[in-house]
Image (tube, rainbow, N blue to C red):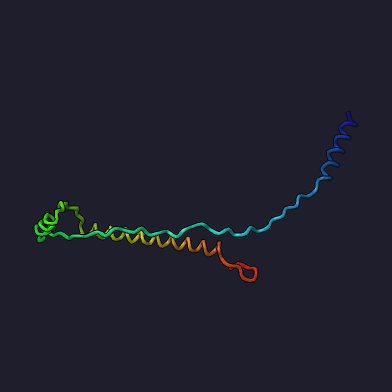
Length: 119
């Protein structure tokens, strides 16, 4: 039994010494061009804003009826109008920011090589 254990230990120790080290090679990959398009601003329809006050409401409704337009009132207070303006400003800012991010990514990934180095 001792001999079998000794042979097993010798085989175990000698088999580990024959393992070669693993060599790892790495090389940088080329940057791939991005297929991102710039955000396209939609073509918005023009809206005719009619400001109705307590003084001109009868006149405005009469003009609309003359043109064959059903006079319907959607009301905003001056504070609500300011909130709409702020919301649109935030949307414009967000679109501009996204556009700049896309431009930055394109400049990074699609930079032209000079003297073997990327800009």
